[in-house]
Length: 320
Image 1 (cartoon, rainbow, N blue to C red):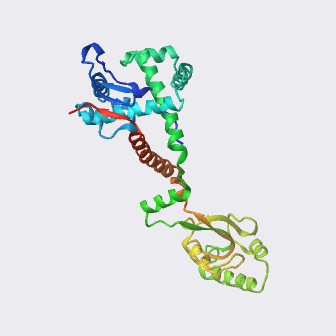
Image 2 (image 1 turned 90 degrees about the vertical axis):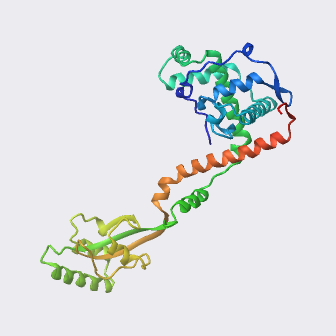
Image 3 (image 1 turned 120 degrees about the vertical axis):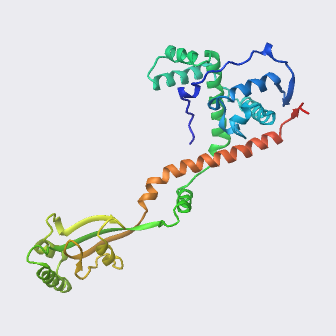
């Protein structure tokens, strides 16, 4: 779920907005009953010099284009703003002043400062207290609207994340084997490799004679880190000695291998359990992939939702 994140750095800009007396109060568009004035367009152009002050979901072009005075881009943004405001009012999502102040107190606390210190910092960065409060109010209302109208209707599943992971990593495996194994180890340092191999073959014959693998491991294993029954624990494909992985690949739980030679010595391996598990690399990446997918889908769905609102609204543009 996309949560509202309003950081102090968002407002680390210096700008001076023109007063309404400085521009002609010409109505350049009407959205439902809301006028858009020439002043609004000029004000937005000034805001566009500081992209962090713009609502990203309404951006149809780069902020630099708007800052240069592209009237079409500016108009599209302003129409979107008016439509969002209209929906906020229609759905009774307007945020009261006390909730805005509560959020501001939370921001101050997260930044380890008092509210007064926060407002002083805001003023130093070129925003009045009223401007900051208005921005916070709009952000909170838009976030609530976005959550209800768009985000709540989107589901990104583990399967979606896996499909995206496989698209990015076509060489990866969807799932891997997870093995639980035990072994009886024979150390070539004790009398040489040939003698160790002979000892291993003798024990292999005892296993073939239906003697208990666990008891034989207790008696004969030369593993310096021996655990009860010769247990090696659980590992996934690619995490253990290749020779041992290859030797148990075709076994069923309960079966044992013949004598297996590795770089460490000789082993007789018993497969105690086997199951399929997700590739651990995917598990590590899964939540990040889901978050990115959700963000992309929300942006697409928001544009579709906004276009529907445009189609259902009265919009008149008084531009040549």
